[in-house]
Image (cartoon, rainbow, N blue to C red; front, side):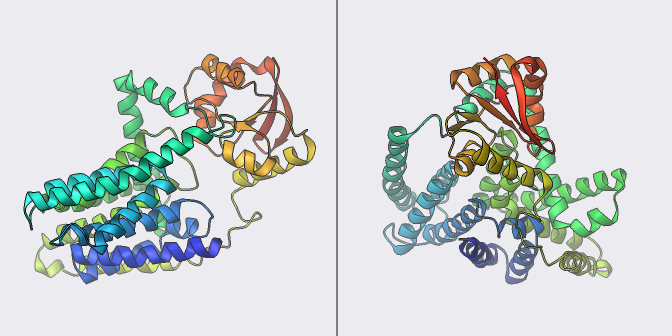
Length: 413
């Protein structure tokens, strides 16, 4: 399985090269893909058995054939079928994949640059009529087989209702997310410089510069009326910035749009350097080569096994092994990662609501009649939501086992 994940990761490089080559030119496409290939975040998740790299591959696959499909003179062709297959598989991989389907429909309906609007409408109708039955079937199936004790509860609705009712909280969450994901982009694409100069002033200035260059490249694409990639990049970034989860080492949810971040950085750098006097034309190749060489110096990436993984994740896994060998098989466990907990322990598991009200979280625990609570040390949600709960209900929670700052609590009714 690990080999398959790595294979999909590097197959996605080929598709992104074709996409960027057709959108810009061979040299720009090659630079963007080369930066992606040696990016720390991409490399890290290319050896993990998670959905991030398959989602990236399916995104690239779908976008490539969608671009081809838009330029065909008929609505029934192999590019159309391959686009539907890619979009459907993308949704089955992650629910957020529906975003690319919606953007694809909008792109077809608004992009009648080559053919009549009637033909573009037929293409959009074909895409919708073949995609939606798969979409409906999958959701009906999930409704019929869902087990509320194994899958996470409806935490998203509670969280979204909370931030939707408070515009200031919504804006704060959005700005925090934008800052987080642009910081991740800078840290993973320019790791050598980040590690070399640890001054807070330098890091903040560096982040501002990198963000400005990426936005310059994005604006260049928008001005050239290339809205497909820009729409996907912007809308996906907004969604993950507002999403209650911000998990994984280095911000794993950024991976599907990481290629576009690097692509827009290169476009922005080209635009800025092209505006300089011709005598300064050496700046663009100098910056590109410096970044590439500095990232190469940080390779290779270590093998990702239990002794090498970050300590918080290792503690989390070892805690689950203790649960499986020590606790009786019955008893529902509340966990930040209920599916992982179920996988490692065979215990029924559920998540907790992402709301900063300890009383409502406690009601959620009671609703599931849970007996145990896992408190991890790697997710922000622990500090945002569980810390107030632990403080207020400390007399009703008994620590059973602790490994590092990861612990298992017995819930006392």
